[in-house]
Image (cartoon, rainbow, N blue to C red):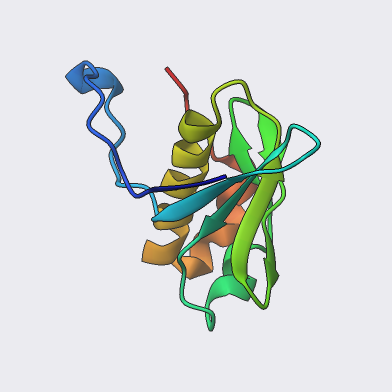
Length: 111
């Protein structure tokens, strides 16, 4: 089962709206109940983006690369919201790949 998202227009109060658009991704449901989000990022910069985990609500998400792209496998009752939160952090890293060393302190709140 495949779903493709880039961003969606959920109504959010202005104070809670994300400041960035998530990196486009494709969600794949895995047989074990996990979800795989494959993100569209330039292959030449992917190694910098995956150097540190993405932190969402205090939970680290390991990002990996392979021939098919940059991806994250996770379990979440709200996989689209989780993939969006990870995608927003990846977008931030794309804007400034040299800042990934500050990644350990990043937070992204799901609403």
